[in-house]
Amino acid sequence: MLVVLTLSGYAGRAQEPKQQPKTESKEKGTALTGCVDEQQGRYILVDDRNLSPIANLEADGFPTESFAKHLGHKVTVRGTTNSTGARPTFKVRSIETVSDVCGPNK
Image (tube, rainbow, N blue to C red; front, top):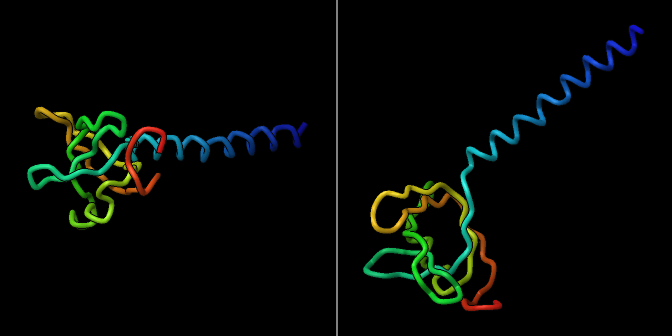
């Protein structure tokens, strides 16, 4: 019986770390996929099918100029959204290239 109590206590402790990553994932924000474009001196994310604007892109922790190497590429950006204004601003913490070209089925 002592062993069962020890295992139960151990199992309870083992579950605690599993809950922490879920909380951290929520803090990391969301992900958006689309194509990087530049309009009026700002980098934006556009829908890869119809090229309509999705969000303004704002660098968070790296230089804004880093978006230039992704122009015309389909990417997934991770970060947080600020939905004030006509178009939401997405604070990008990381960017990953999905395809070197933009468009449907790419």
